[in-house]
Length: 221
Image (cartoon, rainbow, N blue to C red):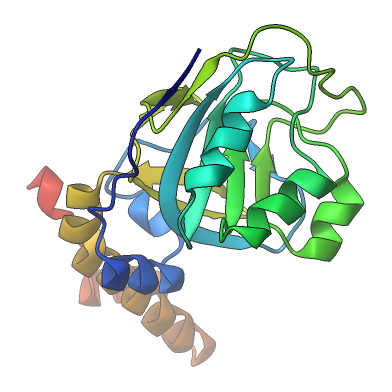
């Protein structure tokens, strides 16, 4: 049986758009919800920002993934828990093509992916625990879940959460956290741009840090 829940659409589209200008590391100054560092981009450079469409997928079965594609919305990021599967890939070239056709803009999985070169050519952001030549055989009973809370890379991710990822890794935030921390992240980005400019002009790092101290995130005041 596959449990399918309605999509969660709480995250403000304007907030999502703003995070395209934010590095995951900036959000990482405020939150500890970064995924395990073994989950990396299949190809680089890459940036991914979107709303989590979560999937609980069994190792040898892709039925839940197919169901997720049926209810996907434009701008969704597919986020998959593979029940600890580290050898069998369930994501590759044709899965990515199908995802693009329904508006999914990227995938984050705690299992391996395959078709590395094709994913690069498609420019489909894929974050996985490595790659594998072993792929699903479509055996067993259709089981899993769509739009259910999942644990990926040691972090609980709920449907509709913000996914922010680049070459440095993947971090997630609830819709409430994403909105609350956006001004902090924007200040972090502005501070870094200013510091790089001043350093190129001969500025001293210690003096610059005193002139513009590291911002304190509102969730930690």
